[in-house]
Length: 195
Image (cartoon, rainbow, N blue to C red; front, side, top):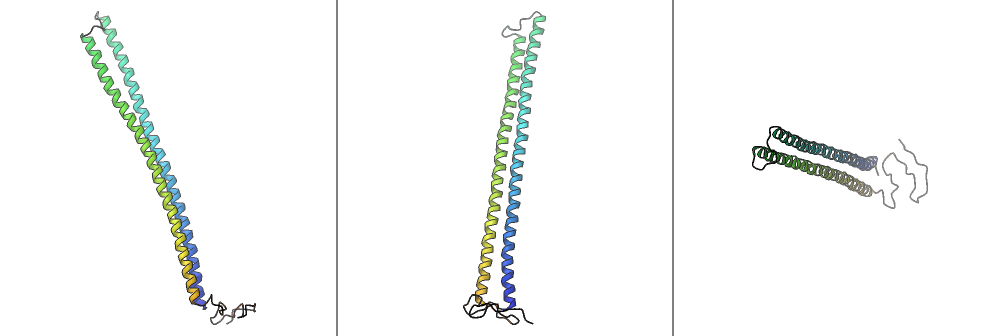
């Protein structure tokens, strides 16, 4: 086997090792992206939950203001000598209108709150899904690196076999400038690189 063939085989082995290192780096990168996607999903979900709390607070405030306004209408009607509880009166109509608008507004806030909670669940699930995709991509990169490295090593073995490295009569180094470390009988000899 000549020095060029040895260098070629060594280069192929080094290439295989580099392919594995590249696969490891790709997997680590995908794992980091997976973790980031999960964190972003959780963060977006927390933001949506915060919006839901704001809607809930606004709904509560709407009910509080309605209660305050109903009390004011009743007090003013009572102070003016009108019965705030008589059906069909202007006071009763004001109270009914106020309650109707309050209920409508409260329903809007409740719907917004529910949508924000749904969005939170969707965003968290989306982050988890994207994270799983990245993790799988990392695993696939590593699998591909191992397969490519294996193919490179197999190719190096084939080239070494073609060069006679595995034949029973080969010393492993047939090129000019090399004395074989073992003789044909398989016993050690003094070998050295000769000029």
